[in-house]
Image 1 (cartoon, one colour):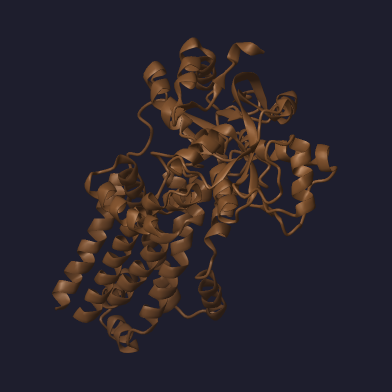
Image 2: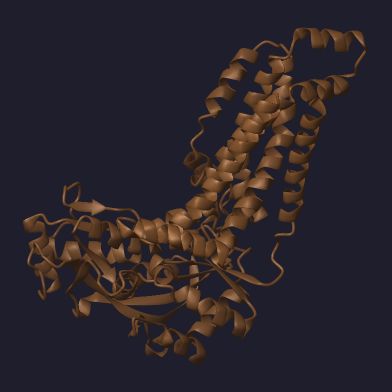
Length: 281
Length: 229
């Protein structure tokens, strides 16, 4: 019996050793680029769709961390990624001016929409953005905010400041989720509340709900709701470890005819999610 | 309600049709927990032996510290390891942030106090006569160590299995240090967190079943060992 236990112990150890050895050769065998990006490009499936096309064209493997734009910019500032794909133009310009990033290029856009339940408790359907937000404040209707300094969150805060003169804080109806866009839409849906999202993520939500989403578009089409995405290379002068050459090739590919065409062809439920506009600037 | 049933069905589809994403997450979990278990056992068993075997001033205090560390929160480990591995941090040069090795460092820190505490306890509970016998036979310190470890093997197995259970199921370290990168550092637990956030319960449930199966295996091996004793 003791023998069998010793055997068992030995076999347990050898299992660990074998697993350990199997885990060792994990270093990259091809060129890898680390992208920090916003949750919308990941949640919609855009990156899942673009990555293999990009790899085929350039031989570079694309890895990405999906987080809010604020955190993505911070990752670049800390030299923890090579390239950024983000959507907060004002913050991005400051970022480049501060020397954290270089070579900012516009790649595509879509627009923000405010979505809410069919019952529309605040009665905002087809109103203008500002009156919609004022109604929501007045009726104390549930509103889910990203609350994570993402591009969408920055835009939403700017709208609150512009329309209601202050950002709701600690109000019972104003929920700051601190999570990604799709997560926040799901929370809004569970609570039958409103939220603001980029159109791409909303289409993904529609597709996930098999075309019958519990939340519908209430406010759209306002010129102030444009959502511009850009690519920025992390500044090698500050971060000697970043792979600037690969980052440059990623940006070049995104603004190239081929990359722009790929973005244009990305569809869900037959709807186009992002409109390429690399040459527009 | 039907999404729960849907999830179960999807679980079997993903598993038996060999879905690549699912298996990538499973494989990442197996790899990373193997590294962290190996490291924590190699470091933790000798330290635990010393703590259980030697008596020295301050031993009590060290035991208390180790026992407290048993409850180390994973998000805190994740935060600290992230801060150290970031390029801004002291170990940034190693380039370990957002890698499985980085996660393994955090998980080893998680497992280490468990291995040390449980090893120390099982060494302490060995009969004192064993140490006297070994000393009278003129055993070298290394021989003493190896003999005690062999005698305490049941306790060691329990230590290893307990630590493995904690490592397999943690999500805080993997999420923060690994970054949940698809095909690379997405483990079973971070994948479940992501799928739930996205509202994709089926995939989450499928992965949860795999994790349950792993935990089940661990428990079965534990009870088998107990029965054999």
